[in-house]
Image (tube, rainbow, N blue to C red; front, side, top):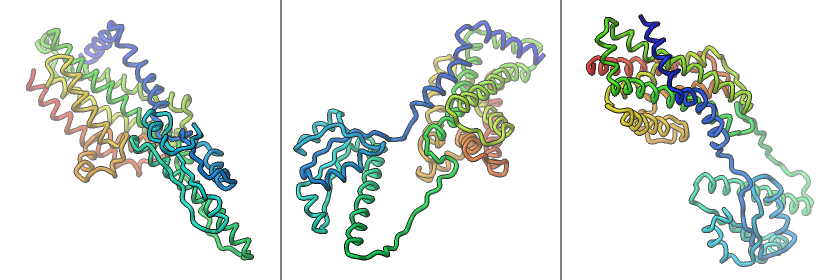
Amino acid sequence: MLKFMIWKELLQLKRDKKMFPIIFVAPVLQLIVLGYAANFDVERIPVAVCDQDKSEESSQYLDKYFSGRFFQRAVNIDKSAEIESMLESGKIQGAIVIPSGFGRKIEKGESSSVQLIVNGSDTNYATNTFNYAAQITARYSTGIMLTKIERAGIKDIPQITLEQRLLFNPELRTKDFMVPAIMGLILMIITVLLTSMAIVREKEMGTIEQLIVTPIKKAPVLAGKLIPFMVIGFIDVLLVTTVAIFLFGIPFKGSALLLFTGALLFLFNTLGLGLFVSTVSATQQQAMMSVMFFVMMPFIYLSGFVFPVENMPVIFQYIAQVIPLTHFLIIVRGLFLKGSQFTDIWPSLAAMLTTGIVIFAVSMKRFRKYI
């Protein structure tokens, strides 16, 4: 009887012309949009330059800013009083103010200061701007110091060179970190939302009671509702992985078997959540709102999708450990970026298996009680 229930559900999906693009086209579009939009790399920061010294030294110093990809000279100004209004209008994101006497002090071997004013409304933007400016200033200052020492006749100058090696994401591309994680977000949206709404739709139409009073047992009825969405979830995993590798150029370094094993356990959790939402919702609108506010938003905020779990208060770190998306993100990011092995990700697999059993057991109990 199970195969007939699955066939019935697939026919229902086929009849709904609007469902096909939601299930298969929307995930790919979401990945493409989020993959390009979710970018924390800060480049070509528009800044105003207020050079009150106009010396050779100040020109050399400013050249260090605009010879790279981090800063863009948006406008030259004569008075620092203009800066605040330009920041408020959004024309610039920062300003460099070089005081008069800057070059003269450097020639005399005296210390000098430069003012950097930054729009602090976006903390990520401001932090990166300060870090870039600090590096540029440090390199320029070191160059001046070495020149002075060489002029003094000191030839043997001990230096410490820092050789940097970036593992797993050598170019520090945000896409390499975010795109694999978007797979978890898409799977969660598709499976939790569609599963809950599909069952609630049966309630609204009165057809679920008709199924229950038939000779078919409750287990095949429920399995027939859930298995098609699990198959859809696996197809979406394959689609999203293909787009990530061939469109975004993100190398997949891990095992495909481990990826699908992690996806299976994650789907076990999300289908259980969808089933639970269906038991507490009377209408499709209620199901949608419940998924949005009680599943998707907490999962996104607390799973490490955007904010590192390690930076959260301790209580939220503990909560994050019982969120399935937290562990699925560890798995997909590890497989894509590090080529993680089973020994590296088995704690996350075990955690998802545990949460899946608990979620599904509670959902099944609620479902039986409801019907």
